[in-house]
Length: 524
Image 1: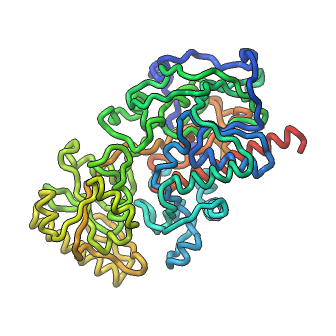
Image 2: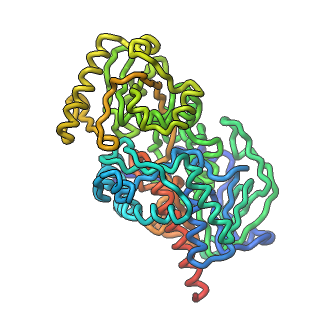
Image 3: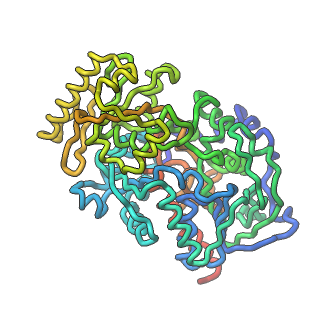
């Protein structure tokens, strides 16, 4: 399924950026002969403690490995996963059945490929989607409690299942890890992978007591803090280090538009440090030029913020307009890339952000605590009349009122014939608990969406069992990767909630694959 005509790899960059991508790194892999001593030994090592890393750890131990450790360079666990939206896209759950939602994995695959513009690796997508229901059940068995299902942009059906923030998934998984005897350590950064004569991964060089510098413009290569140690891994190494959207100097190598003035939803630790090391080790990467901007974040908040819960629902049950024209300018439930591009195209470099509006009936679909958080920081605002809202945002009144009238008429029409789509942007509408929601009942609520850099679609090229390829398309023995550090699942653009699915499905598969390798070597 890998089409070299559709993909760009780091190898293709050749002399263009090979040195500039690695300004402070020396070339050449670290060999086992260069290790002065092995300070500790493990059956397996997992680098990264988010969705993918946590799933991999449980999987390793479920398949019989005992001496496993998960490390993270940060002083806290979970990375981006912990404070992400935490919704997982799954077709075919008891919650969908309860809410009368008919769905099919093939529809989810179709949506995923459409958003990815068919640049996705189809085999990886199929494994990801068809593993969804089993992964959903596995999460529930590990203490994750799902609250509701909603519809994210680009999906034909409501299939984004939420437990709350991402920490409502990472914490139960990490509690499971500790209960079954897994080790979790923070403030340990991996500097190098160590190989033997056969090119097999046998360990890593780390620094313990690492002091991450919380400066968004700091270069992590310049941070020399911590004590050098060498960890042996007999079964192999799983990389679950996440993306690099917070690394401005690295991301602009692939998308020059994403300069320092473009904020990100990512935590500060989401850097390209590990990726630079892997490039140096001749690991194969795909789709690196595709970085996603997240359109459900607020213009009025730095980083991820709190308004996104309300904004997510408002795209489904409200309308968004350009204040200067008073008119809608995009299908509100289109995928993230199209929506972000449309917002960037009309907001005049942030001076004319759009206004997203929902009434009290739509806002009731938002958890009250999430609504209160968004309002507390001033990113979601309440108005007793539509005139107050229009005046506050400086919306062109007459065109807007006509647009609102037509919008509500279309919701009425769709309630009688759900197959209808609005004539302007081809939007279709989803009911909430059997009811289609208009924008007509006060009080009214509004926010100003402002896209931020969110997700790296590109990354390490792997097999469906998370085995890692080098640039000669040969597998690197003992090396596995999962989560956002990998590429191929999402192609040009990732659908909302597919990332959590990707991380968890392939985290589990990475653990299973490494465990099989380890047990086979031992003759178990």
